[in-house]
Length: 211
Image 1 (cartoon, one colour):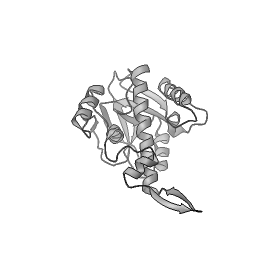
Image 2 (cartoon, one colour):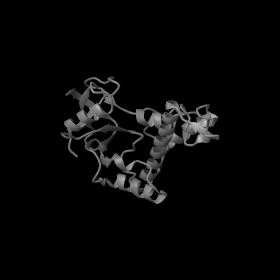
Image 3 (tube, helix red, strand yellow):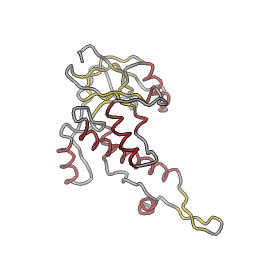
Image 4 (tube, one colour):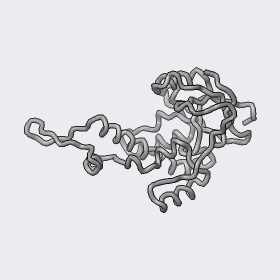
């Protein structure tokens, strides 16, 4: 990849400026043992997404029992039977737990089949086309977020992946197949343009604002 190749990054937190460098930070996790392990597993550090996915707050919740243990499940009576009512906070916790488990699995698969490609926990997420970046910021609920033209290092290996693979399919075998397809760079016929993301390894330099 030549130095001239540029990409488009949506700055959802509106924190970037011209000349800024998107880098990584060493992990600071719930325990010292976990922190030491992750810093050895991903020695370059974590991006903000990686910090969110590996952090201990909120706790990783995947089951009703987990919701119970964290005071997020409410028991209700329905037609004489006891059920569980999941309010918005409980639903958000389950979605977050799902995403975090998928990202952890994706990283283990990457280490095994595509170790030369950038980790989703240690990268910048960008698009190759400006119109796709503009579509993404609208779909993400931040239509006024800045879009920056960015550039990785000249020798950087990037990964073009279809994030629509990163879901929970009907079987465990299909999940393994989907993860391998993601790291192979395969695209699904039904995926959206915004699903087709590019992962850039750090450091990434901000060149100028384009929107």
